[in-house]
Length: 336
Image: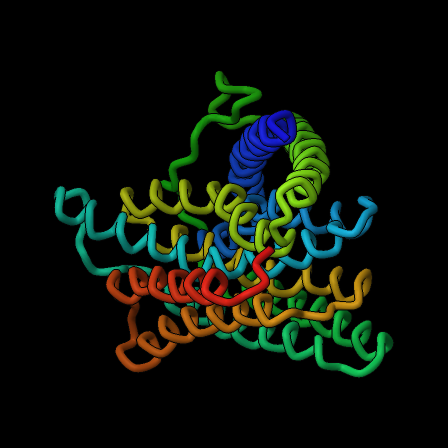
């Protein structure tokens, strides 16, 4: 089992390295395409940093065989929105408070609330539909629900691009890793780095799923519990890291949009794959993860609708919902 644990650690390192390459190239692609901050944060950066946790369940469900494959896939699908809406939001709120105390930025969250509000409303709607689809009586209905999730996400992307303001010329981007000497790298270098990153993420995800399944079999711990808790904590690191950097620079629209945009993506495309390729039969623990994610997002959305803004304190409360979920999981029988 030590070999499997080591392989999981190595695979996570490969996934996160690929995610860094991907995010860097995605930002440059957005710059070259002259896209606005809201579109870059909620669509390009969100999808880019969401690739690791998206590919893990897809590889588990579609390509892996064995009794734990579907459980790992479904757990990773539901775990990603849970981590984003609770831990990632908590880290962002904590970073805002720390940076404001050090004088790096104001304590108020200054963001494009049209972008963030659209993200949160879309997430609550789409993720609720994805969970409700588990109770549909037959596979054709679940396939129809999967198609609906994809259509809703396509509409969300279209509205995000339509509602985006003009791009900011002063938006800071780190040099392209493959061409650090270039002030404005050419498309071919951006796309080359994009494909290298995708290869690293796919290879790392395949290795991760295989060895996580072996650990679940060796320890007797539920593969769903392992994938809900362990997988997203590691694979959500790109969102957390990027958002902290953007918070320190006062780019709150990018910081929040990176997380909220990933939440919309994670609650639509991966569940659509799950609905098509599995029975999508959710256990009590799986449903509890979804409820915690929707409740945490609903709190932030409620404050925005009431006060027309989001405070760092409501972001911090995400940790309460995550702790409540952990307490539920480990206090009920049958974790193993």
